Length: 452
Ligand code: FAD
Image: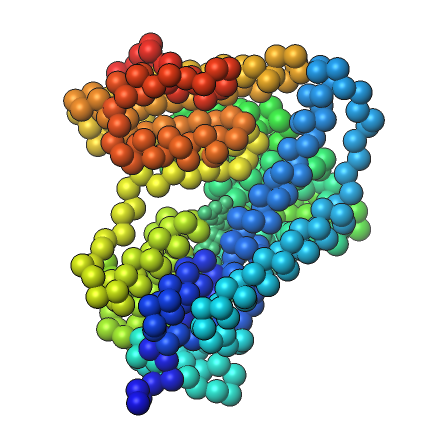
């Protein structure tokens, strides 16, 4: 008889934790999983899924406007927030049920409550203590709100989906992908929307041309960009929230969303009981097998500070279980060429290196870039344009980066991600016959070099 309750005890039932628990259980491992808030974690409950549903809702505004040029008479569209909010809540409830069933069917023991590590092999949940040969920390991250007077009036992405009333005037604070996505969503749904960011344009870290183009398009869609400034105070007034900016201006809005980054979710996790320390972002460092400095304690997903994306947490969980329980040759998690999307309006899809990164990584590159009015926007009179860009290592002809800003860019770049991951060359792209008429065919017909 084993001396522990479990072989593996997972803390946190988000993307990474659930995948690790189910996959390990599938290999005959005795697994328990602890969750204190919502089964399925951030992505399902307050992240990717509800955000994408709201993004779909917001796109309708543009679609209604486009319809007239195609001969449709559309009555003045009206948006009803409670319908969207409640339909979303029902859908998420359905998904929570699916997560529970998946765990039950894979004979993982579910434990409700907040887990606190007591020792290298034990975790306390409420008044019970569970022991395990190995612990896996998959507690994700938590929104971080900077300190300023009135910061308590800020909402975070945790609360934004369930607002009792739709804010007619909305302000997003931040310049990362979550900030631009929510700015586009509330703008599309009809709010007067401001984005306040201290930089000169949002989406730091993305390809510069993509940033510039996306910034102009998001602004052209109606988001009022308040750049180069910070919030210094928020005052609650009878008519709304008075937001004071560092450049001396004041804005009155009904809601402020702080999308100013996230920190590791380690509060009251008991890390001090096992001598584990986090960096200033609250993240744990791990080795290639996701092991922390404590040999029986592992960590994966957002808490480890890698690319904070659901498919990354899922892939890490698969590598973790493979290396620990399959008995097969260990694998390494590959973080190269991860395709990703930003669901601002228009969407951004990207894989591989940006132009600036590629210039540092390779002695010589070729850049193929085009921006055009997509066919769909001809009859509608919609002035939105699409940007497509390929970056090629000149020495090998390999495509090392692909970036698209335009309708459904994420859908498109997922496919290109396979080509980039496979190391295909610009000649392979050129040899591919396009699908006509699509916007995507531009990616295989870009013959003219934009710059070296
Ligand atoms: P999480 O999914 O955060 O799960 C951690 C779980 O641990 C939570 O359920 C939490 O309640 C639980 N927990 C924490 N501490 C304890 C404890 N002590 N005891 C018990 N339980 C605990 N990614 C994408 O790929 N695409 C997107 O479009 C996308 N959009 C996003 C939009 C938003 C607004 C946000 C916030 C995130 C988005 N992400 C997106 C990121 C994605 O949600 C995360 O990368 C993913 O959820 C990480 O999974 P995880 O398992 O590491 O942590």
